[in-house]
Length: 180
Image 1 (spheres, rainbow, N blue to C red):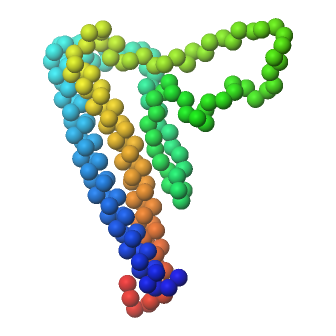
Image 2 (image 1 turned 120 degrees about the vertical axis):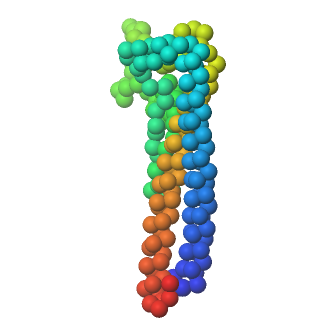
């Protein structure tokens, strides 16, 4: 590859990296605001319901996650993170329950219902009529969780870009020993 082409690729990669860094800074600021808003709403709920009404004693003894974090391979081997609701199946998971052949005629067996029902809303642990501030806290933390996954994906892309930038700089140094 010629030096001018390498320099043009280096410039475009640097511009992409700077854009990604700017986006990362913005998302981190929004994440901090969401988490702060969530904690403030939680404090308002504790004030409205009483300090002992919103606390660890109201948590269920057996908790199930409402969301899961899925990773997928994107272009050039980059990992992308995605938050998915626990009750929702991704297209890879949907399919036949078993790989064996089924007998279509014969004794009909009723399949036993699986115990993987949709997870219960944690707000129900605190009663039926919970304050609006508790719902706001839950929404803020959910948004923060999605933002955290986006930030992790963006950070992976930035790390990949930095590695590509270093490789291009090394190639340029080899082509032009006195430059770069």
